[in-house]
Image 1 (cartoon, rainbow, N blue to C red):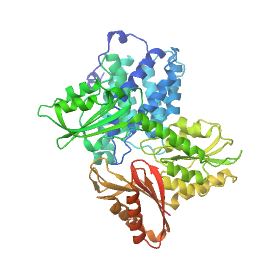
Image 2 (cartoon, rainbow, N blue to C red):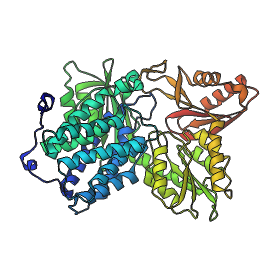
Image 3 (spheres, rainbow, N blue to C red):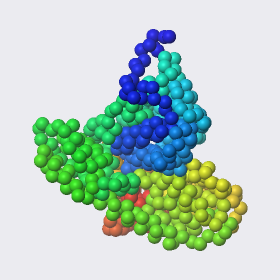
Length: 562
């Protein structure tokens, strides 16, 4: 046995687990622990967003994916390990949201496949399952990138194999796997330059680490409902949580900016907040703190009163989350009413739309079903499947219209007997361009090819407000500035919307295009829309300008140039 192997430190495990076989019942407890700890640290994972755009939803996507996985086994009384893990993997696949959620579902799929019909999990079986999980996850990604959740899964699997040299106890192996997972996450910036530039570790890898760490904490008797207290930069805090799954007791979102007294005790402050609500975040910048919390209706003023007793409050924001969710539901119903009828056997297009206005445009072009979703609200595999399963045709085309929804769309295509093609549209303008090539009664393969070719016919601009200060690809961004993405790449920052839009057009050879379409966001005033439209018309008098009320959150404008 090597000195390096001897140096491995065995984790402490509660006595009751030291000789306990990990059957289906015990594994279900471990899965619940992993989910709980991930949810506790959900906002920390969300904050690890590379780009300064309001789509820091990796933590949310992974929590919702794990919740769907656990829901599949929660009521099961089966003690067979193989059956429980297979059901868990199925739940993860159907509930997968975003790229991180889909990859997580593939990890569980490989894990379950390796265990087969095994009744219990021993050390060698655990190591083999992690190896199969790694292989399945890598195979599920067309172009695997190191420095991501894939790397963390790979390093965890390697740690398990190494641990077998000194122990066959699955709980001890778990401890060594968690140690290596933590180290692997910390190494991700050295493998992926964009992480290093942004000064963060990989969010998906961090989420996977929390799941395994939650299992370990459970068998060590450590709490799972108290996050490791950290103060984040204000710029990294994501305050738009209305699109998350609202659990009982999360009726209101309260955000407070404050200047603390001289002897401010963060740990004591955090402990008091835990008695009031959940989803707690604390950020700090230039001596100003920001606190975020979800609370039940009867406690919506308690965080304000308590904070006021120990600090000077400068700003308070209270949002009714339940009302926002109800509003979203009403929006979805409105979209369905505008869909054109579909004849049996025709080609049906299922498209994802981030706002009511954009949904109506897709409907006017012949979309058969519309799934609400986009930045910060990635639909699940199940939601995409549900949109087309009952349509009177077996010819389905899916337009995800977002880079973080493509994998969930492909997962949906794999779990149905219908003929499904996913057009990899990464933006709304690409999706609309593809819709113009739809021929409902045409040959399926030819229509798919035509729609795919249309993706290159349009340039996309996305204008939003920076959520953090960072420098990426040579573009320096300050939190609060207006930024522009061109075909998904950050290209500039500006002090106002007018300059941002004009500079975007200057970055494109406008002589090659004729039509400019502006999709306005839900929070942009009419006066601002009209002013910017007039400015663009003056700058480009030879181009046709169209303005649509997109209704999308977070993004002031989505711009299509054709």
